[in-house]
Image 1 (cartoon, rainbow, N blue to C red):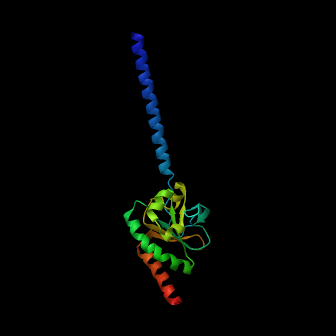
Image 2 (cartoon, rainbow, N blue to C red; image 1 turned 60 degrees about the vertical axis):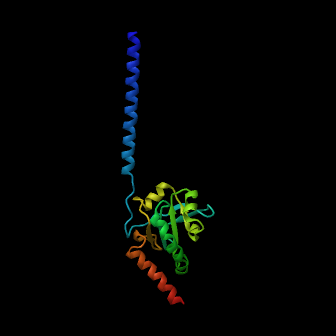
Length: 182
């Protein structure tokens, strides 16, 4: 009978040791992943080209990097402020197209959530879905509603929240460009 108690005690100690080891390794892994978070992009820094899938047809596409100047939009479906920005963004699409400026809504969210968020918005044709890792490359702090202005050389010109001074300046340029064309 004494051996049964001894075996039971050893089994409890072994289970406690295994649990302690598992928790210690989980904490170590979490601390490592925190250190691997990329730094925020700053104006003047190159924006890496990020490959993803177009929301509409699922085809492969690349955003950022050198090529056409672009506005990368960073929105979250659960953000009420982001939802309120959709009409303004929809109005910018034709102006940006005429000015040669690409607009991409970059997202890591699942298709069903994006479909519910965007509804029948024309922005749905400007969505690129990327991996979580690539999304954190351009938005490590997960800000929204935010933007990145990328020039034709793939260099970040400005970044911030939709509606700030740089955003208003870009909107003004697009609106005045259309008025001049008319």
